[in-house]
Length: 93
Image 1 (cartoon, one colour):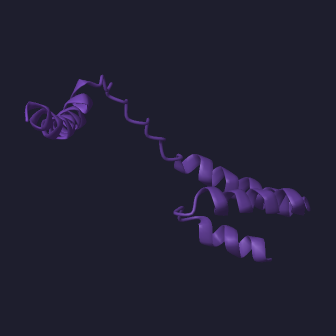
Image 2 (image 1 turned 30 degrees about the vertical axis):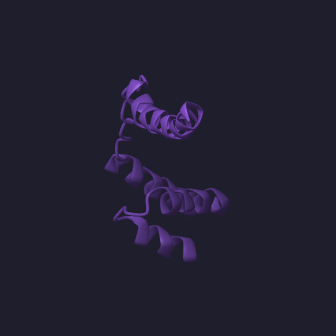
Image 3 (image 1 turned 180 degrees about the vertical axis):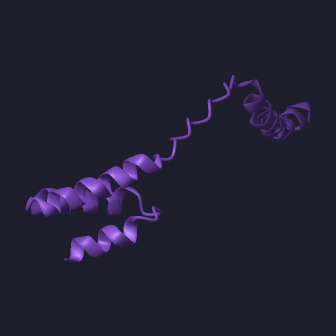
């Protein structure tokens, strides 16, 4: 009779130990605080205006491939720039 009582307790004890370990082990982990990623500064207005101005100059000099490249860089790289519609218009010409 003592053997059957021990046999019945064994699965219960194993389950109890497993549940305790399940909740206790994560608390023992050494989790280092990750540094937040550095914020990328927004491009200065001078850079955006420079791309547009250089594109206009290249267009005036007949360097259309360079002008297209500069206008596309402004379009793709700075979608929120106020100069973007002008670059799109110049690109379409």
